[in-house]
Image (cartoon, rainbow, N blue to C red; front, side, top):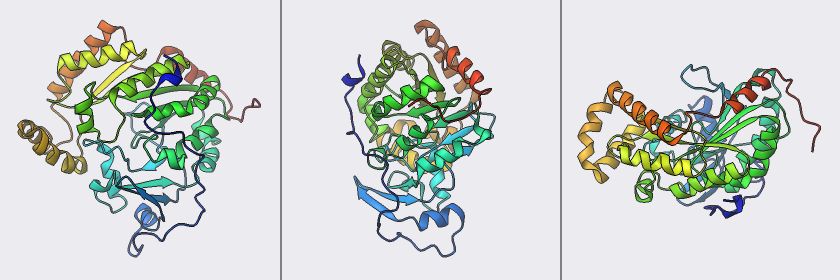
Length: 354
């Protein structure tokens, strides 16, 4: 399938909006607030549509260091705070609480980081990021609807395309990533790059309930195909696996089969992690739509964010067996990893190529 054959959910977007244009006054007073909460309260309202408000958030940096040993990356990039896709289970809802906002506002109040391109250009020239994994979209989707109007993600990728020796991953639920295939190809020619498409279920009706404004599963899988046709390393993440909803063996097999058919090079899955702020939104959703599951979820998740280890181990075994059956890896190909290792020994500098 050629890249042009992918059905687009969103139109082509303009370059990143000038954050210095006149904007309405900030929505809340800043008195008695500190840190990110003060910045958020003073962020001007830039737009309001589709039931969401968009604010321009002053940012000190675009790359944030992640010191956790539990993740395979050193640096994270999230061009937006909040995500309009409104996934019922999203663990990142807690990040809105740092801004003195409720987790329910996560999809209603979207904060766009100002000057994303210039800040990325500065951060990327630091020796500290040389060859270390940079993950775009670890908390919020870099291709959520706001991207079509504000272009923060593309502005960051434009700066990455000027450099050599980077190690970059992008994780998204959106086929809008194909808008930037030209930049992805330029980055992949000089650095290590791969793209993860998150697909929690192959069933469109269930996906619409769980992820109200995210593109359909078939559009995401078609995007995997289009990325592979464009020469970009791409795979599928079934994250999270939701107990009682997406964990049946036949459903997992149907999803991994479709991922294989789309040309995915890897398939990975993790069981639902449910933080308190997400739990406050997810439990009422379960009670309304899937009441039979409510008691089990409360028993598992009321006191901890994790399902029992025995269950998680069973899902790991199930997914591993399916990967073997369908010939998919558990992560990006070795060639990408090797390129990342070579990149770590390169001097990071703007390429002389156009």
